[in-house]
Length: 433
Image (cartoon, rainbow, N blue to C red; front, top):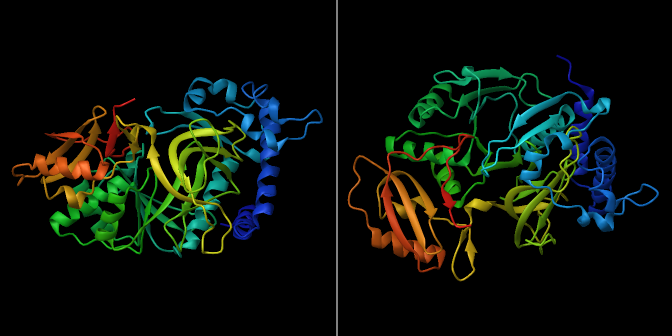
């Protein structure tokens, strides 16, 4: 198969644009944004009037008024599918696909994507693979949500050409519904060089591997689909011997950011997406402080998502990365709104209870922490066969130290902790609105 010269050209361009001076990178983004805005206003009912503030009388864009464009919510996308859909597309957009997000925010989002957006995301992912020296000739396996029966255990679904620009690259996909003990048996049998899955699933593999003595080592462990918690990061490092390499994105937006080769921060793919971090009032936050992640993907012309709130919180770094790339740095993705714990004194935290600490108080296979009220926490856990008396007082004191709040804690054994519709485990859920 002859490589597509357009793909090779775009990959080459991405290798160059990652080092552009900030002012040239901003100009690059604005050229793409201007085309997107013109297309959205002309071809969709939803944006016909919504974008009026940013257009001058002569049709040029007034970038000083960018923040007057209202934030696009997931509910807007859910309810406005037809109005957001473009009536016509330029030939370069390619074929259009319809999909639905996993609903990890509680709201699955039906959306359209274009071939050009998928190619751009794949090229950004390939740049990320190259940052970390991942050899396309070596076998990668992915354990993830999949709808085809070919992905089922005991074999999984093998295919070639999964890495763009590398028609001989090999990957095997295994369905995330596979039991954890079967995942481990499969990994020992398939023996890949690289392993990719959701952070929470990798942590479950790590937990069971520790119990059974399975030794699993890979040259790289790739994460996607959810934030990498501090607990999952430690578990992955302990079990697999490497730090997780994370890609941040969504099905409706595509690739957004990925782990730098020289730090644990994420480089934003600024050639594909404009990312803003905003406070509750819609103003940009000071770098180094948390806020809502709002994105505008440049290449989805079938369903433009302009200033789209993805449902995550994050922190943009105050300083550029030491690697020399000028791409903006996403210091951390904190998680979804429904994962924030809020307390009576007005404070809020992103909860982290470490597995290795909790085992001092309770023997478990899985756990989930649920905030019931402003002062009540419930720890749900799946007991092990050797589970003994639970140290509720110890857990309560530990939770109070971690949250810095006088919370009460109840501990509830459960038969299982189910996966979400997207095949993921959710460690922390707040029922406090």
